[in-house]
Length: 25
Image (cartoon, rainbow, N blue to C red; front, side, top):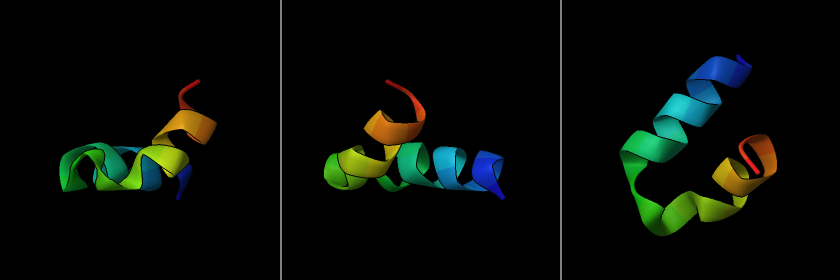
């Protein structure tokens, strides 16, 4: 599930940077 969150966040756009930053610091 974590992989999908990272990919989805990155694909969604720079709107969900919080999640991406937490998973990919």
